[in-house]
Image (cartoon, rainbow, N blue to C red):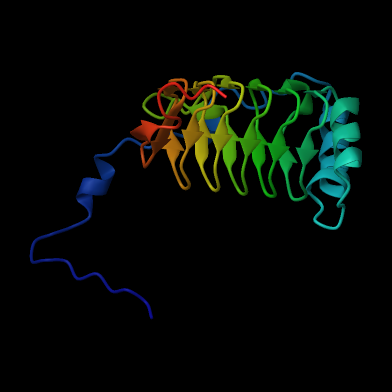
Length: 205
């Protein structure tokens, strides 16, 4: 059912004209993150669709092979599930024994560096790009670092500039806005904040 807005007597829409509108056609930085030839970008887009994102392509080994072929640095014993997306594989580094869940999206216009023994659960988005929204909507990129043993749970959003510490945990549906999450802490919420310690004192095993 359509929503009908009724203006109060004397009210008009003039206030809309007082707000600045940025002309997106003039926003700088278009394709600034494209640091490979155009044919490589388009070739990767096709390969990603067929062999990485494709839900019917169930082989983690094949997925890892093509990611490495396009420049990703990936360690041993990594599991990379279907329906994943990687914007630019040459800007992705993943350590040993990591788990990348279904639907994870590495929107890496800048570098994303993942340590060893990291788990990133289903439908999580890691995005290094943003825009200068107060100025001219120019592209801004900042890298993301996830240290050894961290767990980013389901459907989180991790923004550029974030550093997630050793064995830290990000609770489901959390937003990490370029924050520094200390080692061994559990964070959650929108925006994310400290919740508790992951391990008891003295538990280092």
